[in-house]
Image 1: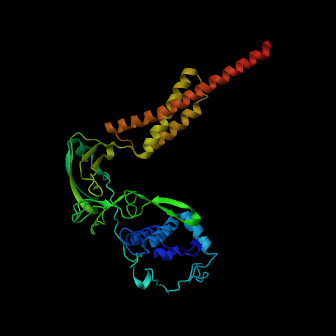
Image 2 (image 1 turned 60 degrees about the vertical axis):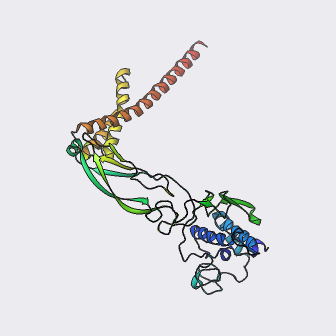
Image 3 (image 1 turned 90 degrees about the horizontal axis):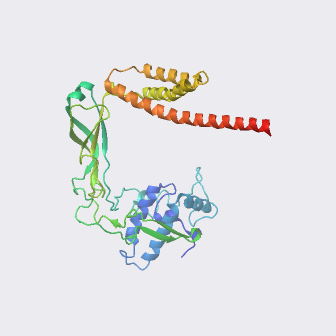
Length: 367
C-alpha cells in the first residue's frame, strides 16, 4: 500500500478540497456501503475499504485535516501539482470533473451532487413543544377554549413513524458490525477510533430508509390542537396536551404540547422584576442600620438601590392586579435574600476587624 504522503484522501472519498464535514461524512457512508467486505466480494474490496476509512479518519478530524493539508502543500500528489488558482488551492487536472464522482461525471461513487438519506437507527423520545397563549385577566379567570395551529415533527405518513418502508426491524450496521465505532490505522497519525458515521454510534441501521422522512420516522408539518384553559387560570399556569409535541425518531414516544398562559396584566416586565430585586436588596441593610444605629453609614447602600428600583418599577407602569403584586412580592423576596447574605457577611467582617483591633490595642498596652 502506498504511504500516506502519496495518497490524495479527497480523491479517495470523491469530494472537493473545500468539502464540508457533512459532505465528507456522506461520501464515506456511500463508499463504505459499497466496499465493505461483507457486501463486496471483489479481491481488492477490503483494501479499498481500509483506504476509504483511513481517508475519512483524517479528513473528518479538523486538526488532522489541517495538518494533512499543510503536509500536502509541501509535497505534490501525483496529478496534483503546485497551487495554481488565486485562492492557493490545487489545480483540478480533470477540468472541473473527476473520475471519482463530482462535476459532470455525476456522483456514482458517493459524491455530493445528490442528497443521501441517513440509515442510522436511533430511537429518541420527542421533545415538548412550548407555546405561549396570551389572554386578558377576565378571560383567564372565566376559562376558555382555544384552537392553536403550530409546527412540529409528526410521525411520517408513509412509514408510520418507523423510518423503514418494508422491514419491521433494524439491522446490524454493515460498516462497524454493530460495535458503533470503527478503528482505523492512519499510519502517520496512529490508530484512531471514531464513531461509525453509518449508524452514528448505535450499531444499527434502518434496512430500507423511507424517502419521505429520510429514515428518521418523522416529518415537519403543521398541526392543530384545542387547548382547554380552565377557569381561574393566571399568568404562568401551564396546560399540557399529551402526545401532541414532537414525534420521536424511529417510532419512539412523542413529547407533549405545553401551553403557557400569558396574562400581561399580571406579569412583571423584566425591568420591573429587576427594580423589585434592587429594593429587596436594600431592605436587610435598612434593618441593620436601624438596629445598630449606623444608618447614616449605610445610607449609600440603602438609598441608591431603592431609588433605582423605584424608577424601574414605575417606568413600565404599576398594575393593580392582585397577581401582579404577588409576583412583585416574590421578586422583592428574592432581592432581600441576596441582600441578607451580603449583610451577614458584612457584619461578620466588621466584627472580626473590630476584635482584632481591640486585641492589638490591649497587647500594645500591657506587653
